[in-house]
Image (cartoon, rainbow, N blue to C red; front, side, top):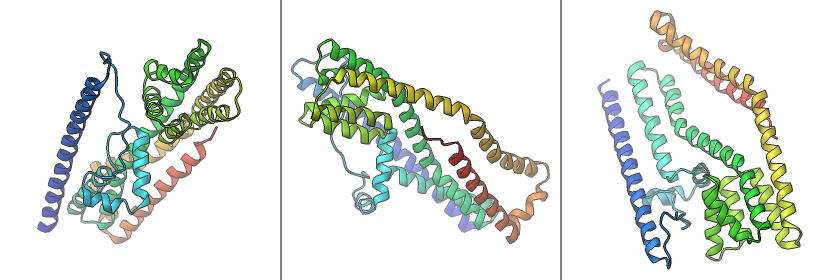
Amino acid sequence: MLLQIALAVFSAAFLAAVAIYLLFSEKLGKRHRAVRKRLEGLSAETPVEGEAFYPILRDDKLSGIPAMNRILSRFRFSQNLQRLIDQAGLPMKAGVLILGMLSLGGLIFLLVLSLLDSILLALAAGLAATSLPYIYVRRRKTTRQRDFESLLPEAIDLITNALKSGFSLESSLSMVSKEIPDPVGIEFAIAFEEQNLGVGLTDALSNMEKRVESEDLGLFTTALTIQKKTGGNLVEILEKIGSTIRERFQLKRQVRVYTAQGRLSGFVLVLLPIVTAIVLLAINPEYLKILLVERAGNFLLGGAIIMQILGVWVIRRIVDIRV
């Protein structure tokens, strides 16, 4: 028992150290960005007050710790995780996220094990806690992608109007970066700065498509790529693309309205057993004691958790209608 308490205290201290490290690394990151912004402004020929600068330096490191970076570089999942973080628009490395997931999962595992003395429940709680940061990142990616797709038709309309007024396509991208809010503005700004530094416009748009991973953006970049190779009326093409994307977005919103009942049912079905168990533990702790103490009860509780996860997956597959 004393060993478990010592391990729990050590894990808590380790998690606190990780949190402090993340806090200071974020502060230092902001300071470095501010210094770089000031240097770029001073080095510009005609610095503009309040003009934003966007970092486009390529950084393939997966962790700020050299040893951890070498280890993570050997695995493909860490590179996919870094890509997911970039798509979510979060200023962190994959190593930081993995370290936070392991620390949180280990802390919850040791706490549940010391309180309930059940290895199965501790393992289930630890795995659930480990997945929480990953779920948060995926949620941020989905939200950012939805915001991008909602603003993309306005960006295409702005590019179309700029082309009608005689501006070049590159100048139109710069206008989008200044007039359209984030995340569309910052992504177009990065693409504009890349092509200013010598990257082809097609490659810059392809890089933006990788960062956002949006089917609507894929229509836009594909249309520009084909027009660059074959020619044609770019204004007319962009008008049709903008109209198509706007209709797709409206259809997606209608689908979300139609599937709201299914998503709500899934949420209730997941939350109801948890709330019921908490209420029963508060009213009569002995009623559910068999699930926590007996080995057969542990297996039944573990099976229930697995069935809950499977039910969530099935419901999400049912309501996830691709448009």
